[in-house]
Length: 224
Image (tube, rainbow, N blue to C red; front, side, top):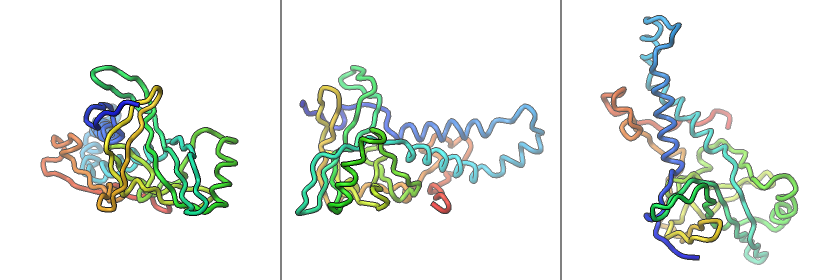
């Protein structure tokens, strides 16, 4: 595998896609409907703050609901540490060359009991190659270099912490069919948790509709 810095790999991250979707959907919301009376439109536009929050919530739900591929690598029964690889598919460029859709792989470690680890390894391939987190709690996800990854993973009905929250990206290793993140653990590093993320209308490219910058957190899903 050849190694490249994180700046050399260019692609559309989850954060890039999220900002674009929120912006596009909000602009669509501001358009007057063909059968909408002017007074109805004006009244609706009084609630643009509520609208941007709900649009952001819907977009984030869509992204945290996307399946990930989770591959078990090795379990250490003495330490109860499980090395796994989490991967997602993205369109990427390197040295002005279009790599097309490529798997980005994020190795990490779970502390997980032996029985649950055995259950996972025995059932993971019997249903699907993809793993669904079954969580809409934004506190279970982080932004890692612009990509949404699980802070906690659900296996066998229990939630297990990954080490991604307290880790950082050193560089990327390019393989034949994948690009693997070289991730280092660092207790002083704390990646942003989605539930703590503060959005603002300037960053979303919506200053035209919000002369005063509006800052907000993505509303959590009730009864999550």
